[in-house]
Image: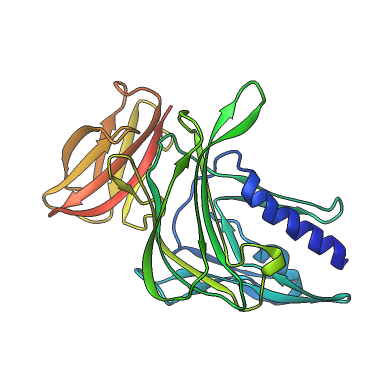
Length: 308
């Protein structure tokens, strides 16, 4: 049993570095869903991010936690490397979250990470506010991959990579900026982000911790797109056809809604006083577009939508 668990986690960590497919929309670190096992163990799952908690809960354990120590809002995500016990011994398991799906097949001894969200820009950097602490010589890992589907091979080709190993303690909330390195000139169609409290199974130590809050993508134009924006604005339908609606619970005054293409070019700027604003999209080509809601020179909300 121990050999199978070691093998699966090893494959899982390898797959984090190697694979991302399909697209799954995502929100932020504010939304959590309580769950309970049949044996009464209560744990929290971070919505729209996959993590190992469902697998670990059968052992009465979790490696991803809802924390009230947040840079902004009510919560942040805390990833912690833990030790699980089995009849054959103890095993370190890192905390891990991904925009995709964690798949572990204990019967066939395979593990993989698949998934991502639709994204067709070439970002400059991935940004996040973090805290971190390492046990022994451990290190945390934050990595983002952008991909493009290759019709000939029927696989996703890597377009760009943003990767950072956190080897030093970060005791206060600190913004980090991880630049993208591009492997080719292609325009991606998918992005996946994976964060792990221990970057390597061989050097995973109990107590290593990574905390995450306020994550965003910086476009080439310098526009920050908060993939995990927790503001009161909603965008639907997304993906959209001929029309798209922006809806807010707040009655704004003198707010401006700006629409950008995937190169950061401003396409449209209009007043937004709420509660809803519907735009005709017939003049836009198919693709990914970004929006910002600005009020008194401050960004209230930002995100993206897809025109089909």
